[in-house]
Image 1 (cartoon, protein in one colour):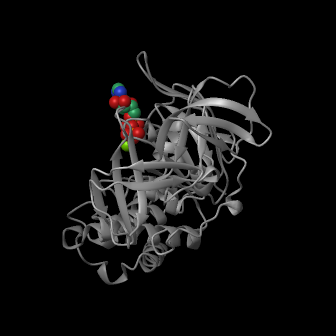
Image 2 (image 1 turned 135 degrees about the vertical axis):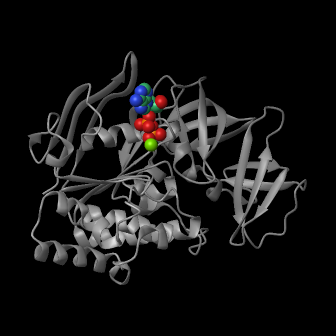
Amino acid sequence: MGQLTLNKVQKSYGTYEVLKSIELEVGNGEFVVFVGPSGCGKSTLLRMIAGLDETTAGDIVIDGKRVNDLPPVRRGIAMVFQSYALYPHMSVFENIAFPLRVEKMPEEKLKAKVQHAARILHLDQRLEQKPGMLSGGQRQRVAIGRAIVREPKIFLFDEPLSNLDAALRADMRIELAKLHRHLKATMIYVTHDQVEAMTMADRIVVLNAGEIAQTGAPLELYHKPANIFVAGFIGNPKMNFLPVTCTGVNDAGVEVDYKGQTILVPVVPRAGMTGRTLTLGVRPEHIRMGDADLTLTVTPSVIERLGAHTVAYVALDGEGENYCAMLPGTLAIRADQRVKTGIRAIDCHLFDEKGMAFERRVETTDIDMSHFDPAAA
Ligand code: ADP
Ligand code: MG
């Protein structure tokens, strides 16, 4: 088993509150990713679960037992860090075996466990080598092997792929997803990279300034972000935000005005919105060429050709607002050329003055993906 409960967990350094009353349940076998910008408290939270940092208030419960006062080795967890923390003078075998040596496991049993972990991680041919002879990806696998042999209830990863180059990172993402399927263990993975979070997680916990901004499955966060922070953090390039004025509310949604054009956004309406300044959100990948429910004729200042897509960056007239559109890669378009772009109401998000989302009426399955390039999705 590997079930974790965080009950009003809080952390302060002096008067500085790093984490504010974190409430979270992680189910046995779940792959949960903590994601958020640098400094939001991800590592601190993970280290508190591990027992490496003290918890200021609240309970950390693993499999029904409060572990706040237990040392790391007695919590049933194993942690993998960004810096692999290997012993350079020891072989790969001894590096993996290290925690088993500490607990004085008999040689036969120890050998079987190390070899089993090495097979899973494709390190069986490397066991006699020293870490210095390995690539970054292989070194990180040794560190993961050292976690595996301990057979923890919960694996904790703190940005384990950050030291690897982009291609290797993509490979290791797939390796870790396979490892999770194979071990069926609970894994908690910290990263600042929303792509890692989206691709690996069963469930993502978005942290912002020491608080949970939203918890949900990757596509739930993508299609129904609860607030502007999550909307801007999940997705790349990030969501466009346009200031709009509410002109009316009816059963079908909320009507807003953007520079003289109105658009009816299909969200759950709220009373008393008319006249207020709201924020309309639309993802770059949902903008199309030509007219739609809201049409913006724009002049991109920069065009990036990525092959599958062409990304156009626009400074909207007068107000210093940025607008970014991800257009088909086949599109013949130059910077400084006027183009008509369209936004469909069904693709829009709407946020109130506090940045909280209006609940969207669309279900993931209702969303027309026909203009997506599946190769790049
Ligand atoms: P993240 O991993 O999300 O980048 P951290 O958990 O490392 O962020 O840090 C969260 C905040 O806590 C940061 O503002 C950091 O400066 C602060 N912090 C971390 N460790 C300490 C410490 N030992 N003393 C004081 N402040 C700390
Ligand atoms: Mg960190």
